Picture 1 (cartoon, rainbow, N blue to C red):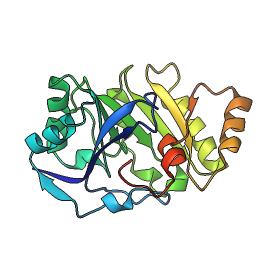
Picture 2: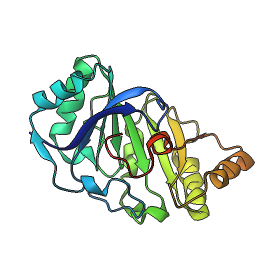
Picture 3: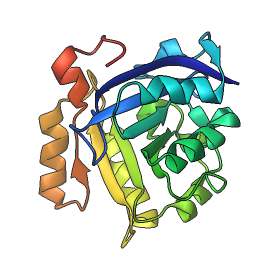
Picture 4: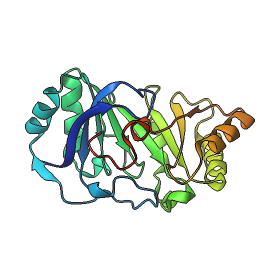
Length: 212
């Protein structure tokens, strides 16, 4: 059984797949309490579903792409089986993780989107740095930037783990904490080899909308 906060269809608001229609499965539970978290409602509660029920609800949307997210989805052991089940059915499958849970057991066909927590999150000391060794060319690393200190930290981590890395690196301003033009200016000024991104779904439906 899986504890699920919500299942919905929307456009992908982040990652290199931004703008594409996706199904989303948001699993309940998280081991972090980031200062800027926008999904605190996924910390607890939720509803129990079997793996088969989750897949059936996603298949109704008729979208061949799915994101398994949270919270931290990989806190639930069944999340690994869920990702594999979607992949076996031909879904492009993204798994969003906060980088504090080992990734080696995740189906290698999945697209891992690993969030590297910066100091502004208040949770930067909990990263499992060995997870970088599990990343492949299809995977992505995301830094949420809330301040100039976070930006400097992200550059340090990139210099250590991301130089000549096969995966995509994304930098996103923390919504409501950092003006997007500041982050964009820093990246352009440094000629950073990373992709700037905004949370597109928040621009379309607003920062407080759920199920989008």
